[in-house]
Figure 1 (tube, rainbow, N blue to C red):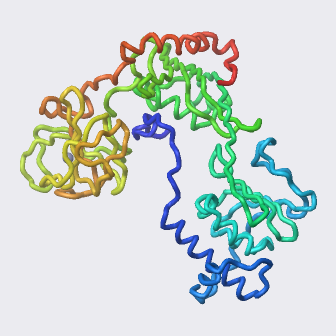
Figure 2 (figure 1 turned 180 degrees about the vertical axis):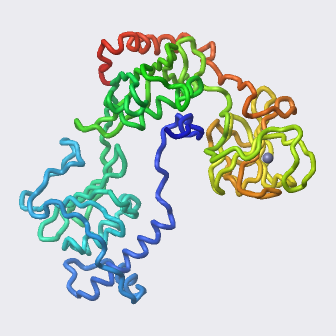
Figure 3 (figure 1 turned 45 degrees about the horizontal axis):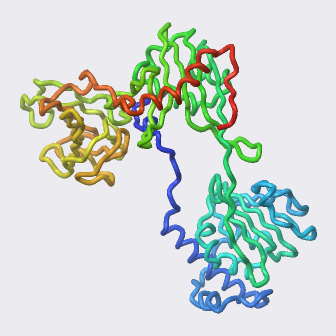
Length: 463
Ligand SMILES: [Zn+2]
């Protein structure tokens, strides 16, 4: 089992892939469009006149040949029509029975242009499709693993579908003049289910036996890690129950969602947690009494390899060779290791501070400050910005006086240095009094459900 020291598990915001890199997108487009034009010119027999812009682009195209033999696209069933798997039945376009369906899986190095060439599809159709305003962005970047469904008749594109994300599909169909693009939304169905396990050798094996993925085991352990040391304290006979969400669409499970509620019985002691979103939108896990499962601070704000120097009021400084109090803890970690905000707060300082090199200081509630030193660089949060516990604020380095890459981490209460490894950490905010009634109403059924594990069945109606 790996450390849970990172803040990822406390970041209950939905993770979402960012927009594709703009430079990369432009590169692909720049590569693709001139090539299409160049091919059209070379072949001299475009089935449809290419737009003037394409011809002009072709004239400016680089002359060196680009590799054509790229590790292959898997052509799944190229000859017969396939049921489109991406679309809900209602959204399925009318497919001309005379057309053939290609289900293309994007491989590393693939571009749309390569896919079209390899499958004998019309390149002038491609030029028309990528110039559709609604399609340009969704088609600019292909990632390995992406899928395209293309219906065609003798290489002439009839329709093209591309999954944009879990809920959206770009659908392009031949229209009276050229092509028309629109986006189809496919609702995701959130179902709630549950599992129960008894630990016999390890937590992960118990999870597997209970039919849940390692990722979900990690999420559950992340909720209780403030109370249970999953490396040291887990014993055979410990038990867990977890109620969690699954995302489904068209009868197919996409992935696990968030843990809704969970129970962990560690050496006879029972811990319970339920997720609750206050009306202010803040999501956290709370005990049945409405206390947060978290502390207001992460004990160590990074994944470290070892502690290279402890808090020590009488330390001899390794470089200065003088007795100088070591006011923090040094966590050795490779340069570039993300450093996370130990607690929610505001950036009070970021800049250079003598021997500590690049330093970032956070101001938290309760007149607590945390300091992060020897950083190689800072993340985006600037002075005055609010950061959430677990947000990446900087990266490990060895700026200032340091013999190797490490994080120098300090914890101060009212300006007094305290040992970050032993100081009593305040609990995170409980359910606010004005949300208590709402909290009880929302979580009561969850506690009841945990009561009946493992005898009862946890599967409940979808959302
Ligand atoms: Zn230090």
